[in-house]
Amino acid sequence: MDKIIEFKNVSKNYDSQTHALNDVSVSIDKGEFAFIVGASGAGKSTFLKLIMHEESPSQGTIIVNGTNVSNLKRRKVPYLRRNMGIVFQDFRLIEKMTVYDNVAFAMRAIGSNPSAVKKRVPYILSLVGLSHKAKSRPSELSGGEQQRVSLARALVNNPAIIIADEPTGNIDPEMSYEIIELLSKINEQGTTILVVTHEHDLVRRFNKRVIEIEKGRVVSDTKQNFSNDTSDINEGSDVINDALKPSIDEVITEIKGQAEEIGLASDKED
Ligand SMILES: Nc1ncnc2c1ncn2[C@@H]1O[C@H](COP(=O)(O)OP(=O)(O)O)[C@@H](O)[C@H]1O
Ligand SMILES: [Mg+2]
Image (cartoon, rainbow, N blue to C red; front, side, top):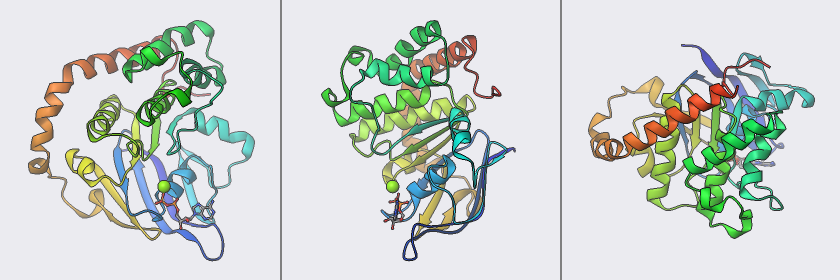
């Protein structure tokens, strides 16, 4: 399998006291879905920030999509992010814009034409169940709704990689399940997905790779250390999966098809 993300002996020290990551070597294949778990302060957000180059590593090499991003120049960062949909822990929505414009903005930023935006944004908003809030401002929404706007914005450009930092941190278990289910369906269409969470129940319900970080080190990785047979644990969720399948499958196939139609294919070169 092609590696889409590779960390080679990566350390990140914010200052002499804070060793947020310590000699991490791990790789993610194209098309994988992985959960990143670990206690608060373990280094999970740092791991994601290094991938999206919000931070640079103190040591080691990070390759994303074939590019060494370890010391990426600032002007190159937008090109890296073009292939990424990012769901931030704190949403980072723009308060003076409506929900619609928060999502449309992500498309306009990469130069999509207005007719593509007009077609795509309502679609994505319906996918995350927010069509009726298109004209609202972020402050008029609940935490769960804001999180779904943030997810819509991450999906809208049909990125090769989706990175989500605790996307279920502020929402109820049922909605959390639906968000992961949605990401899981998007993953089935080939998008690589990384999700940070500390909800163990949620992780158990999905049969995915789990990378555990503790005090800046990868201490377990289901891909490296264990057999992947967790079918017994996941039996219950299959029932729910089946119940949700038809509608979500249809919508995802449709949004992917539409993305290609309007030139948003994720493996498109700049
Ligand atoms: N910008 C920063 N400056 C200094 N220390 C930081 C910064 N960001 C994170 N840290 C520290 O690095 C460690 C890892 O943080 P983080 O990656 O946010 O952990 P997690 O997401 O697992 O909770 C923590 O000790 C945290 O306090
Ligand atoms: Mg964090």
